[in-house]
Image (tube, rainbow, N blue to C red; front, side):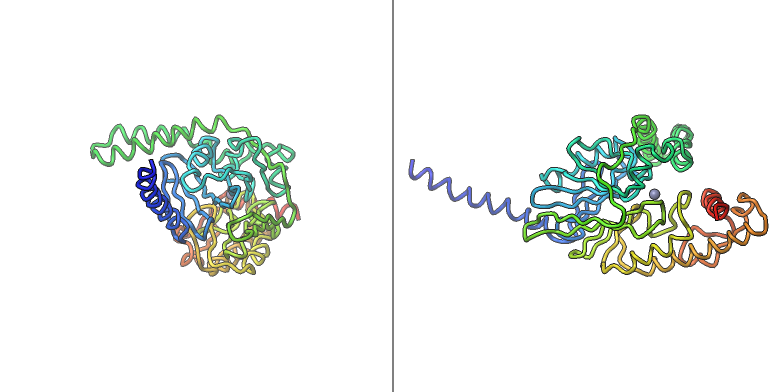
Amino acid sequence: MKAKLKIFSIPSVLICLLLWIPALTLAQEGDVVETDTHRFVEVAEGVWFVTGSGAVFTMSNAMVLVGEFDTLVVDSHVTPAASRALLDSIPAVTDKPVRYLVNSHYHFDHAHGNQSFPEDVEIIGHEFTRAKLSGEIGNVLEETTFKSFSDPVPATVANLQRQAASETDPRRKAELERAHAVQEDYMNAIQEVVPTPPNITLQEKMTLFQVVADGSREIQLLHFGRAHTGGDVVIYLPQEKVAFTGDMMLPGLAYMGDGHVDEWPVSLEGLKALDFDAWLPGHGPIMRSKQPIENFQAYLRDLWDKTAVMHSRGADWEQASREIDMSNHADNYAQIRGPGIDPRAIRRIYQLLDER
Ligand SMILES: [Zn+2]
């Protein structure tokens, strides 16, 4: 018996070492973990930037903060099905239970997965986010923002089906069939949405301290004023020098249909003043430079001024959206190819100008 124990004790040490090596590797910055539906990139120890892999339509990015005892998730994707896929994927990076969900803002593509989180998960967001998702201010399922993106989905599904059916190249046909299946699932998943508001709210600032191996991680939730919506929250990690910006700041042009284009550049000053090395947008890749913030501020100020001129001349918003030319910003935004602005943005700016 004694000899047997001795023999077995050596391999068990080896097994422990073998288990330790991948665990240590996982903690290195820049680690990537992929599941069937998601891709996790470790930006700093225990700080994961999460994107959809395309197998499920997620529409937006998320962030997962892993502590010693619990996990905090930022944003819940576009449908309950997408957030279930996220929750199913999180065990690939941690076995710590999800305790908090933070909404960067109320928009459907970041918050319509809220309902998938277990009852005991606290949902934190700006008080405006709660007002919108609770139905205190309007019905998010009936508003232009949700409908203008969601109403065309059945047509997209039909289109992809038609294209897949007529495609003769086998590789391209398989891609189209896959895209069709993903969009069809998304179309059905929308039906399941029950807007679910945060149960903990903030106005300007809230700080959480998450227990981590060597102390605590400071997690600042910061509202710098109205911008992309009336309640944008930046999730800022001062020790790791990381900021999750939601849609308040994107690599490209953000949707402006609910925006406060006049106040947005001022609110971005708050973001710009933070000390960070990386910013994680609600859509698009990890960003490092602060220059895009200044570029976007310049765009917003210019768009506001140009729209105000059209408004004062008595042009209607449809004409203004056709004629306003932002080509002077084309170096920063590849999608600008001459006059023409998203009409939802111009209609919104007209609304704000009319209210003045
Ligand atoms: Zn948004």
